[in-house]
Amino acid sequence: MMWRAIWAIIARELTRMLRQRGRLLSSMVRPLIWLLVIGTGFGAMLSHFGPGGYQQFLVPGLLCMVLLFGAMLASLSLVYDQESGVMRMLIIAPFAHYWIVLARTVSAAVVGLVQSVILIVILVVIGYFNAAVNLAILILGLVVTAFVCASLGMLIAVFSKTLDNFAVIMNFVIFPVFFLSGALYPVQHLPLVLKIVTLVNPFSYGVDLLKHAMLDGLTTPLGTDFTIGQDLLYMIGFTVAATGVACLRFSHAPVIETLARILSTPRRR
Amino acid sequence: MAIKKAEQPGSDKTKYAIEASQVGKSYGDLRAVDRLDLSIPEAQFFGLLGPNGSGKTTTLHMLSTLIRPTEGTLSVAGYDVVKSPVSVRRAIGLVFQESALDRNLTVDENLRFVGALYNLPEHVVRERSQELLELFDLTTRRHARVGTLSGGLRRTLDIARGVLHRPRVLLLDEPTIGLDVINRRTIWRFIERLRQEENMTVLLTTHYLEEAEGCDQVAFIRKGNLIGQGKPKMLIQSLGAYILEIESEAPDRHAELLNPTLGTPVQEGNRLMFCVPNEDFPVAELQRELKSAVHALHLRRPDLNDVYIWLNRQKPRTRR
Image 1 (spheres, rainbow over the protein chains, first blue to last red):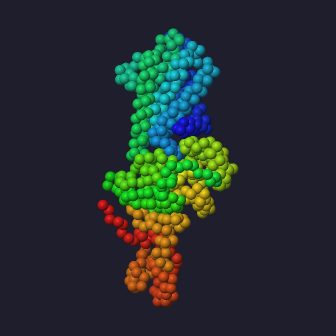
Image 2 (cartoon, each protein chain N blue to C red):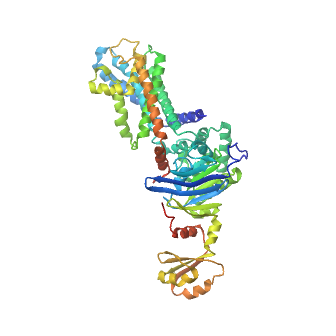
Image 3 (cartoon, rainbow over the protein chains, first blue to last red):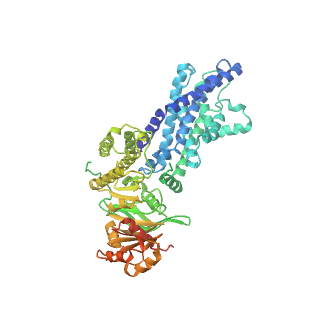
């Protein structure tokens, strides 16, 4: 019985994504700038890794970047649903309130995945997608990482009261998660403090898993940091724990009461 | 609209659509709702009236399971709001003061979204959307984004959204606030039709008291307490035949002068309002007597606003 509701929530999310074309376009341009501008610049500096070596190393991280921006922003937008009115529909719908968290997490992950597939198509066309990729691990890595990003966003969304500012989200959530992940440089060479943060960051393991999928077939000194098993275990554990906590928090009576009050207060226009 | 009704559990047992017994809600020391008793029979059109901050919205939220009462028992459509919130939510439709639609989706997409949330079969959603859109003259806007609709159309669509799953109890929070007269009338006609065709119980909160005169029953709430309840006609009749308004430079003196015949007035600045108990009150005589001393003398039929004014005069029930 919940499947139709979940599917409707996913379909709504995808419709919104396709209608906000400017946002979709910028989420594709962002990783391409990293790849073609920064990747080329640093690649020239790091030419001893072979021509295009650094750019090849960047591709898994950039796929994860699209998942991070796509899925995490989609689940963080739970906070903005109050303004679009959708939360009013959801909160009085005939299912337990934690289903709102679950359905929005799944739909956010799907949004991220669709964007990553679009990026892969672009990468194939411009020739930055190597043929030696392990497809099974790639798909597994994209799906699990999408859920990590979605559930991390959801965890932040259900606890935040002041998440009303896009700049705050970018500076305090998305950029730290991305930069401290091994997406741009191998984890093993980092100083201890940064290394610890990176090891805690679940996103690091998504980047690592995609490196396994895309770089294992190549001989490059810029390789992976963990095993596939470690990556999966950490990410699945994180997703389950984060989603569980988010569900508990959201179903908590005072949280729903506060939300109901916000939803019923007429906005000043 | 199709008359066929879905099978509803417990419908033969419940006589009351809404039953509240000693329901209270406190936030720390603040009592938002205090020992509320309500029995609303099925298919009744019930108005919950009171100023902002009186506890109307809190009551509405308790009825829709979003807020848990801290005392008493409350059941809607035969289900307890604390024990079976999901069943209650399936049985109710709630229209918030603010729109519950997605502005980025079209009219049609919004209705299909709601249909899916209530797990209605797709052909049912199609049929009902069609009927509702025709009723509201929205058929031509079916594929328009909700954000492009006027405020009035959005409101009507929001009500259509609230009744798509044919709730047994429809809760309306100030449904006509901010709308022009024409849109208001459309909405009232529509609610009337729903009540007749679907046998729907409707609970309405409003502070446009003239709109509540069409209710079968109204209750006035102030600071979380019910201060009066009854059929609007009866409440109005109980005030008297007329309301006599006098504007005077010396209101205190006139209040004293008329007190023996008309009782204590309600005083607002230099305006006095008296309840005139019967039709054959000698108004002409009074007019001759006061003519030179007052600015204005106005005799009119009472309405719900007067009921509210007179109820407000009484002291609220003492609190625990």
